[in-house]
Each structure stands twice: as C-alpha cells, then as structure tokens.
Length: 136
Image (cartoon, rainbow, N blue to C red; front, side, top):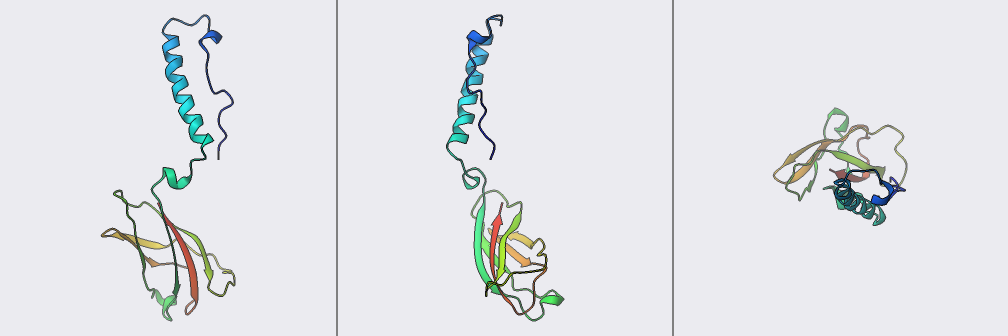
C-alpha cells in the first residue's frame, strides 16, 4: 500500500507573495489532503473500496475433463454492477498436494445474478480440488 504524503497541510504563510485568492485555494486543497490522508491512516481495505465477492468450494473434475467436460461452479454476485473479472485466489488438491502445472484463467459467464465458472484449464481428471475465487 502507498504511504501517506509527508506534507499533510499547506499554510498560506508559506506563500507570502501569492495573490489573495490563493488562500481560498489552499483551504480546498487542505480539505482534500485531510480526506486523502484519512483514507490511508484508517487502513481502508480492498473489500471496502471495490465491489468484490469471494467464494470457496470443493469439486471433483470429471473423467472427461481432458475433452472439455467440467461441472460448472456457480455463486451469486450480489451487486447492481456487472462483474468484470473472476480470478483464482487459490486452488489445491484436496489431499494438500501441490499443483505442479500452471492453472489458467477460468472461463466464466454472468447469468441472472450468478457467476458461473464453466471451465478451469490445467487440472487433472478425477481429482478433488479446493478452490477459492475472487470476482471483481
């Protein structure tokens, strides 16, 4: 996360040669600076600022996975805006063993208030996985 600016307030006294209107400008600028620093100081989180939905589940890839067979995973979005992106936060085999191959970006659609993940590339058929997704 970015650090708050070192300079948190401007003083009119520091600008002796400025025109008379500059004092009003400094007031507006200081108000903006106070609000900005306040955001950083309160540790505003990703979830507080961006519409996002986290979802976790387990599933077993079907025997025909290599041929494109996949049991869709769906979850509700819950926001008025449309989701823009679905990311895999984590995926692991249910037994805890690591996935050695690269897992690609999931194929997904948004239908009637739900996000439906229709395919996740890079998995092995017949294996149970623990999946955590993040929709933005």
